[in-house]
Length: 556
Image (cartoon, rainbow, N blue to C red):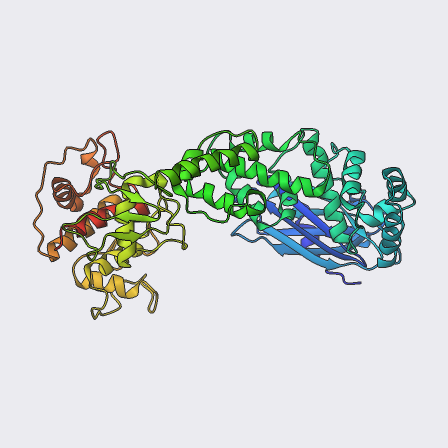
């Protein structure tokens, strides 16, 4: 048997400090000792390692006395793993060996969480599992026979049916849901898959009883694929107060009778919740398309239709789809089959009509070549309608890109090097020669090196101090204004200054006052509301696009 014994770990993990909790743990016990354990911690200030101790068969965690030499004699397996700092996750993969099938007590320990997380693990010989599967599959004629076969001898242990996901779960109701799911087929040949089906049936039973904590059972929802997990994360991370509670309302007491029905119920609940708490109507199109097996919708570009649905409460997917069809008919009859509306707002953008995925660009001083329309591929711009025209024009010119093909991410902050690249490219300087080495934090060969070096040689930018540019730092609103002002001066553009009448004008740094006064006087920048400029605040991608577009519109 493979054993990883670490005396230091055995001693060190006895002393814990309660700084973090394990928020989810999932165990997968296959046949012949194959075991996987994974989980996540709930905070960034967490343990750097997690330890796993598996007790010998018939030994319990309570038998540990805190003396390493004695505790090791009743320990079957001892190991540790590092926590992934990106997502606070950890995992173990191991193989136990034994003479016969049975349960093992185990615990997880860390240097920053307490109490220990106790687990039940299973060693199941392949032949025991196959024997149980054969017995149960032979008893699928009716539920009573199925239930009896599952409960005969140690069959429940072999099949994983004695692993309850929560003590509140109605095990007989879960068993009935599982029976309905397999009665016309058979149990899977793989124990892990059988265990997953049992957990899914248990989850359905808990939903039917109206007793569920979505966050606590996130891993089990993940059994239905990455798409479900993606939109579940979207809802769980929503800033809307009622998003999670509304999702739960759509999920509970639906009288789910099979695992397949559970999958459909989860998809419908996510669609209904995302439609109401969309955080950008493009997300409505995406969720409808992602669950096309339920919606039969295979496009995500009908923006005017999604606007009709956005923010509304629907009691069922059928009622939402009826509303979708009605809105689509209206849109087609009026000739507007996508994202109608006009831009405008506090960021100083001029209005521009748009139809379909096309946006009309006004004539006159424009950075785009003469053409009637430009392509708008992004589906997440409804929250920044005032910046549609700017983003469309800069995208068409190749000056700015989205985070993905269909997502611009308008509310993401902008790094200093990102804004400098935009400005250098927009100014036509990107092919200029340059000398490296001015800033110590600008790495040779990095994607941003030439843009920063060119910007510095053109006198457009300075560093945050004499030797450092500030790579990786968010650009402030006042620094963005300074860089824009210097670029326009380089181009020979004369600007009109006005008095700095912002309520927080005294917070504007001295080096930025001239630039902001001239950009404000020329209508290129406005405040953030309540007559505030917020000079030290960070700029988002939509704001950066708008101010750059406004500035370039002055250049013939």
